[in-house]
Amino acid sequence: DAGVIQSPRHEVTEMGQEVTLRCKPISGHDYLFWYRQTMMRGLELLIYFNNNVPIDDSGMPEDRFSAKMPNASFSTLKIQPSEPRDSAVYFCASSPEYRWDRQSTGELFFGEGSRLTVL
Amino acid sequence: AQSVTQLGSHVSVSEGALVLLRCNYSSSVPPYLFWYVQYPNQGLQLLLKYTSAATLVKGINGFEAEFKKSETSFHLTKPSAHMSDAAEYFCAVSLSGNTPLVFGKGTRLSVIA
Image (cartoon, rainbow over all chains, first blue to last red; front, side, top):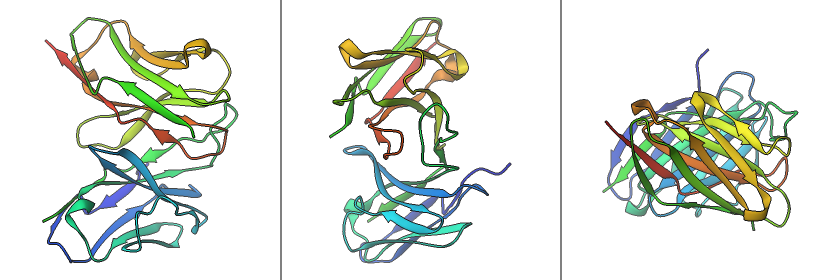
C-alpha cells in the first residue's frame, strides 16, 4: 500500500515567492495533519482536517500560511509571501481516526516531508 | 498545558550497548504517551504507545518503554543497540484520547561500531 505522499521533497525559493506544498494521504484515512519541523521549535502542528474540513488551524503561524483540502485525496499548504524564517521541513500525516486510546487504531502516518529553504 | 521534555538532544552508544532515551511529561492527569522514530530522510513512524493499560510497553525493533507516574517519565530503552537503530526519536503526549499529539524536540541516537 502506498503511504502518505508529499511533493516536492525539496524546494529552494527566494523571499517573497509563493510556495505550495502538496500531500496525498493514505486512502481511507479521514484525518490529515500538517506539521512543521525546525531545530529551534521541534515538531509543531499547524492544522488538521477531518473529512476535508479544517478543524483546528490555531497552529498556523500567520496569515501568510493557508491550507486547503479540496477532496479526500489531496491537500495543499501554501505560503505567500515566503520568508527565510519559514525554512523548515513540512510534514503531512494522516490517520484513520482521531483517537489514541488502546481500543483505537489511531496512529499518525507521516510522509517523507518537504524540505523548504527560503533564501 | 501538556508537554514533553526529552533530556539530551544527542545520545551516542556503542553497538551492543544499552539504549536509554529519556522523556518526561507534564500533565495533571494520566496522559497518552508515544514514541516515534524518524530514520534519515524519512517521515516519523510509531514505535510504541502507552494508553493506560500495562505500564511496560513493548514496541517494534526490540524497544520498550515504561510509564512511571511517580516520576512523570516514559523512558525508551533497548538492551542492545544495533547500527540500524541510528535515527531521531520523538516522545509525544496527548492529554486525552482525542487531543492533538504534542511532540518533544527529539533525541538523535548515534550507534558507534
